[in-house]
Length: 307
Image 1 (cartoon, one colour):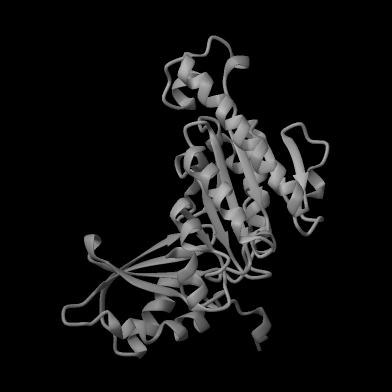
Image 2: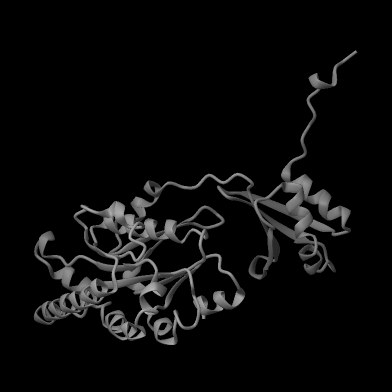
């Protein structure tokens, strides 16, 4: 007599499992394509004639339970391909290493590493093209991880960094690094940093004018040697709310720097865990077109960040 423990059962494929779930809910399909990526299983489903895509919307929770996904699967129609796409996040996620992205940073002036998308495509952006970035997210949403990614990729590119750390512990590991020009924690020191950056900006504008260049990229293209090239300058503020609530008038000199700094190669990354209207004002949003919205406490906070 055979023991059941010695019998190997044939596991159905992922496509078969999904097809069986859809069939159990009377959803008829013509075909299916599976794309396996690092974080997601992506199914492109061709629906049979007369089947509404909204029927799949109602069973996404059941699909997530079957595949034991990290969160509720995301489903949406892709019109140009004529398919309904379901993204199922793996229950175990292997985070990419920052070193995997360094090759993408080589040709950018001020690269910041964001990560990978659902298909595993690397996402690295040039901060100077934004030219300023607003990051919002509640405690535990991964805001600090995002900021450290940005700082490390900018250090790799040779940028001059000015860090503002009201908590006094977040950026302490960057002390004694050549690219980090200052780390300040108090409001008075922050005001001094803003004035110093404004002075650097005016010096750079004079250099641009003398070389008849409209921005740092044209200036660097004309530079005779590597030492003559202008580096990116980035101001990173960890908790904006702690600063602006002490004195709301500080927004004006910061936004002046944000408005004029792009041509001089100066950018600002502003992060906050309280994206309320009195912290992220209309003046701030007008001068920080780049947005990263992480998990927040309410949909209102999300709309404040993303406008």
